[in-house]
Amino acid sequence: MKVAIGSDHAGFKLKEKLKAFLTQKGFEVLDKGCFSEESCDYPDYGEAVALEVVNNNCDFGCVICGTGIGISIAANKIPGIRAALCTSKEMAQLAKAHNNANIIAIGARINLQDSPEEILEAFINSKFEGGRHERRINKITNIEERYKC
Ligand code: RB5
Image (tube, rainbow, N blue to C red; front, side):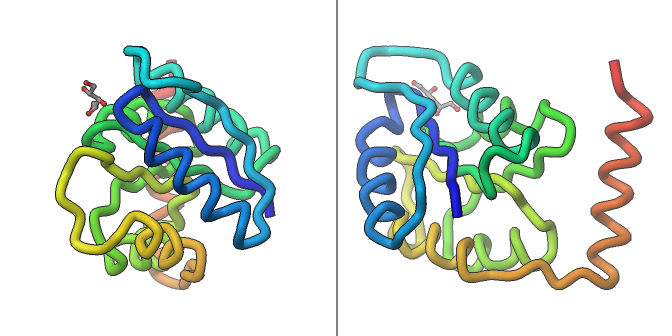
């Protein structure tokens, strides 16, 4: 399995930690930056990770910024992306099971209910349940179609 990972400067250290965590779990990790703690702009990295996911070059994505909010908003601008900001294992599990999220967003500077590694692992181990949730995902796709620029 291949994972695209990206962060801004606020998420850089956590990105490095999660990269090591994923590699140790046997994932191939594609690092889309940033590559230092020098100030940079989260939309650039949210977009870069999202493109790897929608183009099917990666199975899923992981994005990190200070809160996880800005980078998830940016990633969600790419049609086909469902980026979910998760602060707990429960949210991560449900983001996949109910929302079929293809990117997980984590905040590096906020209080999380579980460790970032536990949150990421819960996302990885969860499966989309389909059924009624499929219908809802299709409605999200329809919204994208209707508001296409
Ligand atoms: C950067 O200072 C910070 O604004 C960014 O990492 C993020 O929290 C935005 O949503």
